[in-house]
Length: 391
Ligand SMILES: Cc1ncc(COP(=O)(O)O)c(C=O)c1O
Image 1 (tube, rainbow, N blue to C red):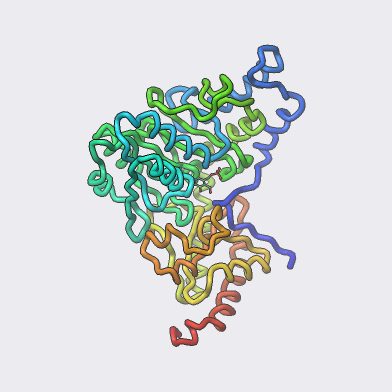
Image 2 (image 1 turned 135 degrees about the vertical axis):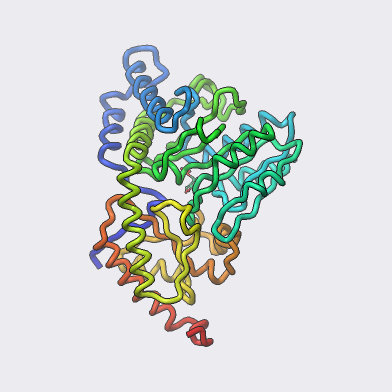
């Protein structure tokens, strides 16, 4: 085996050359502490300021100081959910989210439930869409926060964020969105979309791991995350990770600058992949919304082929894919997202996520589909279900 093809970009991406070039000087030439008053500190602060400006510009935030750096999407989600809930607890203790959120949101809500908050987990339809009517029905007098992800990480469905945010505001409720999978997929305008808080992460968009940001609209209250320093306007103390912040800023700038060219390419690859799979393999279903979805992620169910086994066989052929959420890949339980969309345990466990990166070619896809057809056939030949007479 010599060929290697990475189709797990929704899990993480490589760091692009442009991003790396932005980061490297921050490790040695420009190594100051951005909090220091001398020139070394001021140089580092200028790098941090530039990254904050780039991110604010990319999502059309009104002010750069509405952007707070975090250690990634998980921290941004934890901070948004718990920090806003705690800040508004005297107003009410009810939160609305969806059943298909990333565990960073779901588990933050679970933690709040232990403190006495009540959480409504909205269902989704078979395409993974949250209904705006369901949001309206769930809103109560004591609802303080609605948190709905912009794009689902497993199936790629895009939620009606603007309509949901507007609905929340009609009832005086704050709106947060986990946009970790949305940045770079389409234009995000926090003012036009009426977003109060938004989480993002660098390592899904060719930036480094362990860095992200939380946008919090001016005027929205949020509890401090880390005490012990004046960094991040006193809300998240600790010496700033300047190289990673520089990398995040550059990664967000590039991702938003190149949306149209990247999406055009990803759409062509995605459509070619689906067409080729449909030509070569039977009993395949595509999970997620048929139109309202990002181009880079395709989730497919291969009936009568167990997903984890298929993943392992593809790995032997040099192809990296994912079952369920990559962050949960140690879990043997079926994906909570596919289950919420109505798939049986068996179909959910026969599903694979393919997420394309910007370096993929049609030639790579030809190889992937060939290996997929071979390995699906191999698994089906030993599947009890096949023997039971599905074919
Ligand atoms: C939708 C979504 N939210 C949050 C996260 C967590 O981000 P991070 O890995 O930066 O903590 C991920 C990562 O998989 C994600 O896909």
